[in-house]
Amino acid sequence: VFHPGAHCEPECRMANSEDRMTEAQFHGIERIAKGLDEVHKCCAGFKTKLLLECTAGQGSAIGWQFEQLAEILKRVRDATRLGVCLDTCHLFAAGYDFRTPETYAEMIGKLESAIGVAQIRCIHTNDSKRELGSRVDRHEHIGKGHIGKSGFANFLNDPRFREVPFILETPK
Image (cartoon, rainbow, N blue to C red; front, side, top):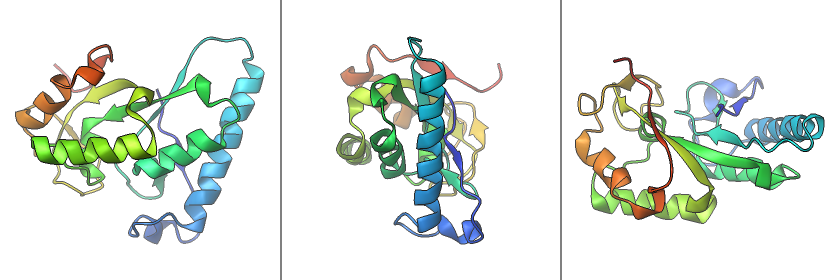
């Protein structure tokens, strides 16, 4: 499980303020895909699946929109060797609201449309110290942050994720 990376073009500070992908983000996505192709080439025959983790969208990070992850999957030569890891704090910080059944269904619809729910192979379960859409990655204990327990209930009660591992990342 790893974050895809970031682009380092001159306009990187402004790139994430837009809803659509910028040229710099496309360039970053292209470089990430080429890097993954190289890893796959060097590790031909390996059975390990690499999981792209969604990001909160800080700075010039790539992967805070489902469409960005989908572009990486589309550009990698052998996408069957990849999957996606969702991080609840990162999703929330990136602006995906899943605290109610309605907003959860809307987010899952966007996920299904861009990536496909079947691509989700792991879920990091973290509450968020920061508010919805803050683009700040600060994990909090479940129920003590801005997401609240109801948001986690939506994931835990979704039968599509019954076989997907959930990993808590906050300290004991």
